[in-house]
Structure formats: C-alpha cells, structure tokens
Image 1 (cartoon, helix red, strand yellow):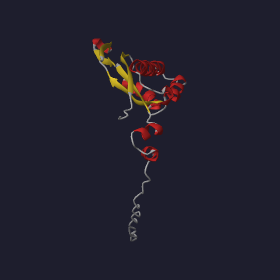
Image 2 (cartoon, helix red, strand yellow; image 1 turned 60 degrees about the horizontal axis):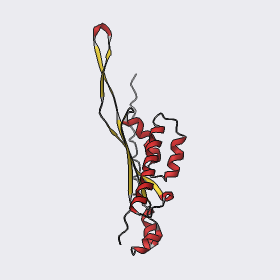
Image 3 (spheres, helix red, strand yellow; image 1 turned 120 degrees about the vertical axis):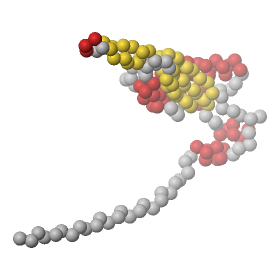
Length: 166
C-alpha cells in the first residue's frame, strides 16, 4: 500500500484586495503548522488577515470533513500549510475626474486566495511502506554546502601625481 499525503484546499474568489497585499500575509503562514498559522494570522494587523483566517479555517474543516467521509486516518494536529497563493482576479476599471474636463483611468484589483493544507509524512508510516525513519528524517534536513573560495580583491592602481612647473 503506497501512502500518499492527502491535500485539502479552500479558495476565496473575487476578493476586493490586491494580490500584492494578500501575499504579504500569505507569506507569513507558508510552511507552518495550521495551529501556528492561525495564531499568526490572528495577531496580524493587515486588513486582509481575517479573510486569510477564514480561508485557512475552511481548508481545515475540509480536511476534517473529507477524512471522515472517506474513512481516512488524518491527524488534524499534523497538518501544515503546503501552499498559500493569491492569484490575480478580474479588475474593475474606473474613471477619476481630472483637471480641465479630462479623466484618468485606474483599476481596482481583485484576487483569488487559495490555501492548501497537507499532512506531514510521519516516520511511523514510513515503516509501513518500507523506508527507514532515518531516511525520512534526512530528507527534511539540508545538506551542508561549501562556499567557493572568494577571490582576493584586486589592488587599486596608484596613479602618479604630476607636479606642475612654476
């Protein structure tokens, strides 16, 4: 039996916030455990934070509901935010009055917020599919990197100072 990490997602479309502003909050929660992500969003002072919290809670409830419906053994405490993206939605084109009877066009941006949560691979499940727990733990660790030797700084050429004749 091959173990696949289940993913559960939630999406909020056509939200009246620019994707750039939404990404500021989403970058704070990427890769974190769901519990930590909820705490982070709760104390974030950005206007989009309640929206992100709502989508995150929806993804968590989707995981809870679908695991019961499909009979999956999902540990809700072991979920983490796998992906958090704010894609650009349609733009509202508006006109602003300008001097001398002219008009300036501007755009109100919208975004589609998508959050995916998944279950981290547990070492005890690795035994069931034939992998060693040390191998699973080693995958998460970064390999030490060696830095290339830096080139010595080039010496500045001294310019000869000419004395002016009087």
